[in-house]
Length: 426
Image (cartoon, rainbow, N blue to C red; front, side, top):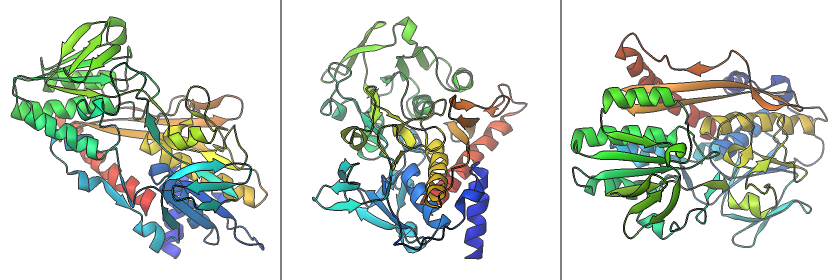
């Protein structure tokens, strides 16, 4: 137990969370009931850290499945050098080591007045505090021609699982010399570097298996995360294979035809052998159904505690939250969850939560042995929101002295994944 508490303090400190907020509160009444909706990086971390902070808390995690498949590292399944099963996380440690109650079921409604969560089977869970970490939903109405049926022909693969495997099978079946079309959405969306990492690792697969093939990228944006690093890598590792069309140059998709595997953009209409269409996104549907989202589909929160702007006793974290300069990523969700755990425990003690420091780190692979990264540190203030800390963070060096540096970052990428899944799911 001593080792566990030391580990907790060390990890919480790395996240920039005020440690004083985690002192176990002396609560004479029945243990406060805390319900966490969503078992991803945000929800699992919140449940775990709440129990680490105070084992007397009654913490229930609600997740529709009995396992969670991580989107981080799912691109490597598409590249052919990872198995999807390697991305599966279970809730066993949360239950056995940390005493979190895990309920398999889908949250279908939240009554923020009565403080209850309704599940798909009609049962209800009462809460004193609620943490909502529902991830994203895909906006299938945003682009004419693209809906859930079309996704079976033009996979989005933006929720890891069956769609990932479908897109991988299509790439395997694609003839040498075919064109792989990727359609990237406008901001905000889950994992800003994700489409470009996907382009990179699929290019690695094609280079080694179908070298006559091409990749065409239609992008709604004029710029993207780690752009200089990615494009330099494309030129050196996959010369002549990848064409990126920015939004200003006609890259914004106007419509798709799933039957014809064609994409219409300002650039023109192009037909692909395989089309990966990543649609615009919103907060997970339960957050919208509960009235926690703004008109833009995302959830406004207090930047210092991630308390909902729409309902009392509710916190929203992860991809669903409007978090200022923080990107929507597994790393961000993990960090935000620790802030929420600290804020809830402080509140139960009758104390104010300490202003947090926040960070995000994102590693991407261009090939199995070529890694790049970006790290950001953020300050959260009531008046300015979540903003970057000047002269903090940074990206990989633009011109390494040797490719050994890129290989080392690829090793860091694997180490980061192992560390964050252990920190999130225990």
